[in-house]
Amino acid sequence: MVTAFAEMLKCHAAPGRVVWIGLRPGRREGVQTPGSAEVSLDGLAGDHAKAGKRAVTLIQAEHLPVIAALAGMDVVKPEQLRRNLVISGINLAALRKAALRVGNAVLQVTGPCPPCSRMEEVLGRGGYNAMRGHGGWYAEVLEPGRAALGDSVTLLTDAE
Image (cartoon, rainbow, N blue to C red; front, side, top):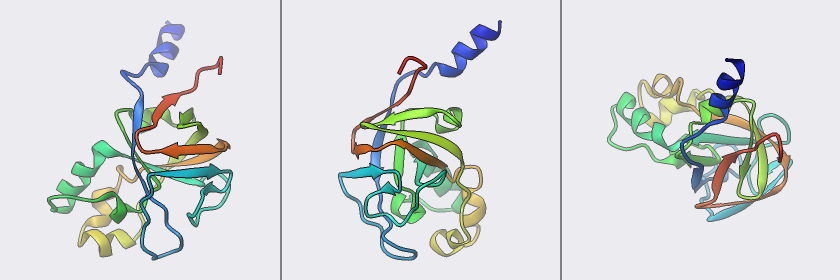
């Protein structure tokens, strides 16, 4: 029975996809949206993040409409949330502590990325609470590489 559960945890319906990339050159600076980015141990080139467990931030594309609904908005755009990568098609919450291939880089999902108090400013009253549980994930860079729009996001297996 343990083997079946372990296998279930590794099973995803399909790979995910990178649907948006954002670079934050500095605190409170505008977000840049390139079609691709170099991923180093420090995070995405051009972003203000630092090496370590919080080098890259990811958010689930499917959560954007949920955040919008909870914030009383029609639409929430990724640049408003200031995460690095918006991923569609694979459940990021199910990938906590897992190693992922994103493009040709390898990231390890390290933990949830809570919303910051700035969400009240960006999304309006209740914006912080609208993002709670939907704020995305931090990741550490295990292998540098390049990530681009449309790139596959897959769970690495023990054999890789």
